[in-house]
Length: 178
Image (cartoon, rainbow, N blue to C red):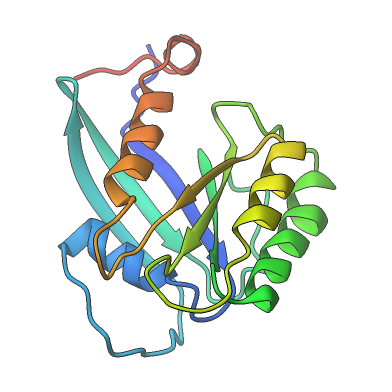
């Protein structure tokens, strides 16, 4: 048996797309309106229990996601973008197309899944919901809409992460020892 103690998640995306807010919310259960740009990589470890299993979730946000190392195995690549910013959405698409698809990361491989996360869904303004849904559909990518500020969609996203980790396919490759 392989003792797998960490679920590794890398969070990528444009500046001000809500990456750090999500990280704080999932690890510390807090939200702040104040925006402070990150000046270094961010890491948090959160222990969660779901369906009688304990998971140590290792969350990582690189300071420069255009330079992150694909040789490090991550279980999930969460690509965040601001739902009201076309530039943010285009950045997310470019990141996926240039880094993920080109490097042959298998989209449906339960050990390296890509998930697009549309953030700030509570903000007024333009929304690129149809465009993002179409892009994710043709590329077979899961799409979640969240608002850290209003605590919307976060539980659904987290449950999906755990659901895939609990799947038979995942557990055939990594046997958990509780």
